[in-house]
Length: 333
Image (cartoon, rainbow, N blue to C red; front, side, top):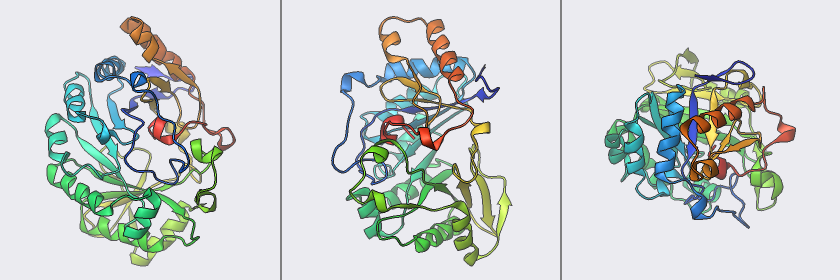
C-alpha cells in the first residue's frame, strides 16, 4: 500500500494502451495536426502486465484500460486475459468510445473484463458526426446493447457537458440520456468539460474556441423537467460521481464536476501513458518514466521505488492555470 504526500492512499491505476483513436473528437484532438508516438515507444503487453503485477503487489487493485481508443489495438482481448489472471486484482474495466465494442463485448467479458465506460456526448446523429468528425452513432448504440447483453455491468455512459460551435446548449441530449437511464440499466454520468487542456489549449480554431462549458447545476435544472431526482448510492466502483435516479428507473444519473465541485482531496489515482510515463494527476505534467528503466533491466524493487516517487509528486489539487500541455488521448483521460 502506498500513500502520497497528502495522506491519500493510491488504489487505482488507469493505463493507456494506445494513443491512437478511430475518432477525432473536437475537444480532444486538433483537426490540423495530431502527434502520435513511435510504435517502438508504446508499451508492450508484457510490459503492461509487469506494471500491473507490481501495482497489485502495492494493493493498487483497480485497473482501467484506456486510450486513445483501446479497442483499436490488436489482440486487446489477450491483454485483458493476461491481466485478469493477476493475483490481487480487484477490478478490471475499460473506457471506450463504443464504436468497436459490439463485436468484442462478449470476448472481452469472457477474457475477464468486468465493466465498461462508454464515452458518448450526444444522441443526435448529426451532432455526433460533427463532434467526432465523421463517427457513426449507430455503432455506439450497438456497442451499448452488446455490453449489456454480455454482462459487462455496470455499463456507464460518460457525457461531457458543453455547448458546441452553434452556441445552443444540448438540452434535448440531456433529456434523452435521462430517458435512457429510466428505461435501461445504464448509469449516465454528466461530466463538466475542462477546456484549457492539452492540444485544445494550444491549437484553437477549427470550431473549438466557440465551445462553452456547462455546469452540473445547469444539467440538473434541465433534468428536473422529467421529475424529481433522488440520491442514490450508485453502482459498483462509482468513482468520483455523485449519483441520483428517478423513481422506478432501471439506471441512474451521476455528476462529475471537477470545476464546480472539485474532488481532488479524495483522488486515489495514478495514470500510465501508452509510452510508459507514470503521471500523478490528469492536469499536472509531472511524470516518472517506467519504460526506459524496465527496458534497461530494472528490478521489480526499482519499479516499486518509481511508483513511490510518482505518488509523492501528486499535487494536493489541480490548478486550471497550470493545466497539462499533453493531449487527453495521450494521457488516457
